Amino acid sequence: MYRFVALGCAALLLASCSDKEPAPRPSETSLATMPDPVPVMGPEKRILAVGDSLFAGYGLKSGESYPAKLEVALRAKGINVRITNAGVSGDTSSAGAQRLGFVLDSQNVKPDLVIIEFGGNDVLRGLPPAETRKNIEAMLAETKKRGLNVLLMGMLAPPNLGAGFKAQFEPIYPDLAKKYGAKRVEFFLAPLIGKPDLIQADHVHPTANGVEEIVKANAGEVAAALQ
Image 1 (cartoon, rainbow, N blue to C red):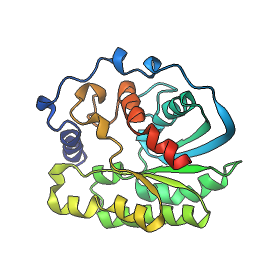
Image 2 (cartoon, rainbow, N blue to C red):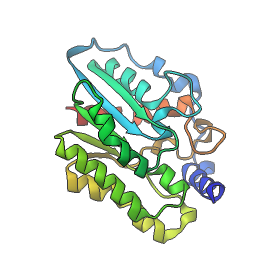
Image 3 (cartoon, helix red, strand yellow):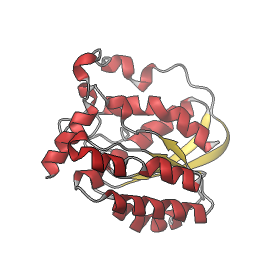
Image 4 (cartoon, rainbow, N blue to C red):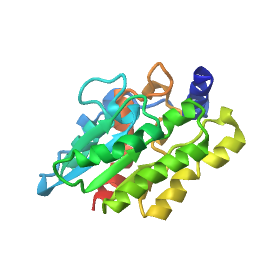
């Protein structure tokens, strides 16, 4: 079942690959080629990134995870920010909901923004969308109770799970973001669609260059949510 769904995720990420131009070479996509950084100014902002392997940096070297590269990109924009990476590989939304309170309690400083990214492992395990909805709602309720700003990373369902699953799963993110007043990135992995060179051999996780593309695509949304 896991392999079947994983291949479905690959189909989603690699959709229309033959119709798209080849992905840019790594040298063209590296954050190192970004314009000279703006001087970092202002009081330090704290971001807490809570998620699964997509945040933990599965298959990547130290410093190549999404939170790590996001911090570099935001500081290059002149934003004085520090990001705590609370990503755990293999976490479902249930595991995230169970540990969120503990993670929040363990922060020495109240975060200015919490980024929540879950749902991929729920899909891989074929968990009911209603369960995913309940867990993500619990996380948003907890952050709202604490008066925290939230950015919710949206996910899409792979096509092999059918129209019924898609119709139940995909509205979770816009529905709950609206209900709890959270900001939302429509589809966290969107920059990888049709670009197999940016995806690891497991057909699910981004490469280091893939992470850079994701950061470049949504760093502006993160900065806006932080404000």
